[in-house]
Amino acid sequence: MHLIKSNFMVCLVCPKSCILNITGNLENISVKNNECNNGLDFVKKELMDPERILTSTMRVNSGIIPLVSVRSDKPVKKAELMVLVKQLDSIVVPAPIFSGQILVSALGENKVNIIATRIIEKQENNYI
Image 1 (cartoon, rainbow, N blue to C red):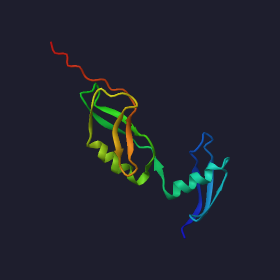
Image 2: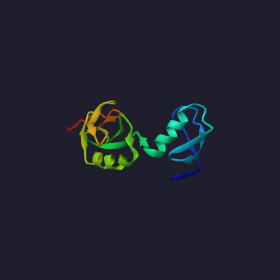
Image 3: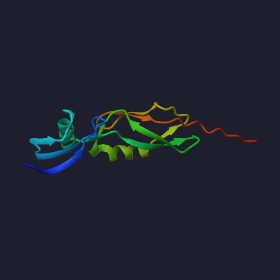
């Protein structure tokens, strides 16, 4: 049985950002200072199986800038984040790129899509 000493965690579910006081163990968690019922669910998920939206950059071929910012379309297990970032590092995407464009489909265990978060225009070769 894993005991949780009195810990504090900021709840990220809603804009209130309650500072939660967490006590108990993983089987019997007690949460105080939550202004809504989402706090307990947030703490359980965060302690047992934390997830994050992946944010990173990808290399661009023939773009006016060399990198495009990207994000996943759904949360990824925190333990898998670095594996996915390394996979993205080996991929080069061609310009032009549009904001919201899916650059990689079904990546990783959760089969997330990787989406561009900005526009990258294609570099025009202006030879005289």
